[in-house]
Length: 91
Image 1 (tube, rainbow, N blue to C red):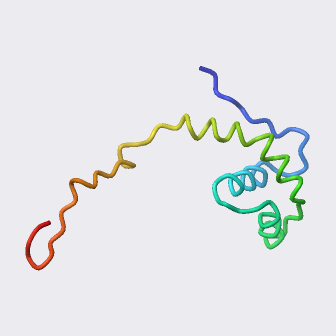
Image 2: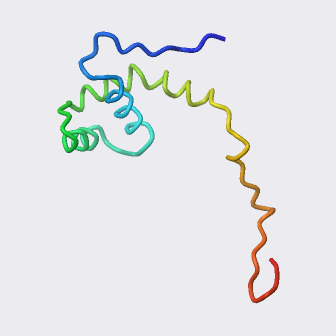
């Protein structure tokens, strides 16, 4: 299997800014204009349309990489093995 390499060639913003905006847009229920305001607070002037285009261009590649990541053994939590003591009795 070949891994998909995301190319940021010929883009105005550095890869860190592009990846952060795409991550914010797809990870949280933020609007494009809210992400635009968040970036302006950090000193990055970008339009909401640029964020939308970045999401369309890079969003599928990010999602594919996230789906391919296998969970580690530490990510598993078995709720049926939890024991708490209430009033000296184990439950």
